[in-house]
Image 1 (cartoon, rainbow, N blue to C red):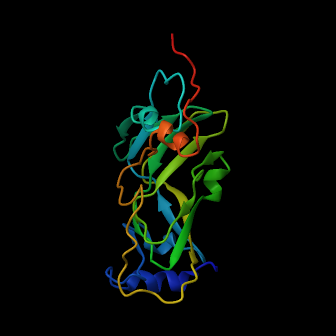
Image 2 (image 1 turned 45 degrees about the horizontal axis):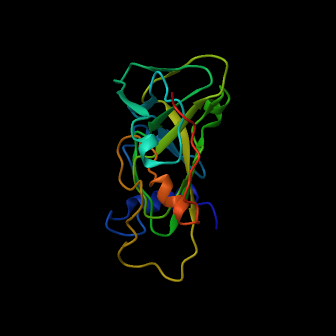
Image 3 (image 1 turned 30 degrees about the horizontal axis):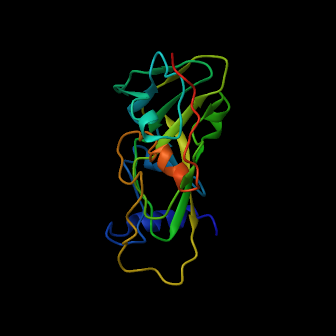
Length: 210
């Protein structure tokens, strides 16, 4: 598995969108500066999911626990979102992305952004055939409130080859829990009770709420 260089990235972006080997990253607002030798810069979009205030007493890996855990917010261009110190929000890339069938990707925090203690990629891996804006798990791990302005360069997309015996003429691998989102996607879980039953656990211990 090798990292895809700039020249190959640009060749992939010139292919027809119907080609399973094609790469789409749109819009590129500053194309001349968007490309590094081995990556593409991605910008912060306008949509966010904020933790509810006051927060829920607890969260579990369960569909019922996470459906109401976030508040949707739109931040207009030129405005900003305040992320308090040691707090988190879900954001999304401005760019809509189509990953080729024979590549996977990682999104990493830009080094300049990381040096003010912002983390965006707690779940950085992007699978082949993904389509959509990428949800960013943004954490302000500094001791100072953070102002997030939509449109700032915030991450880098790094593409890697996936070994395949042959590349299909059509991409039929279009499935997944987070396929095609244009806004930040909240976590999607099944029922915790069902997951536990599959491994023989019929009783689940949870905190009692008064």
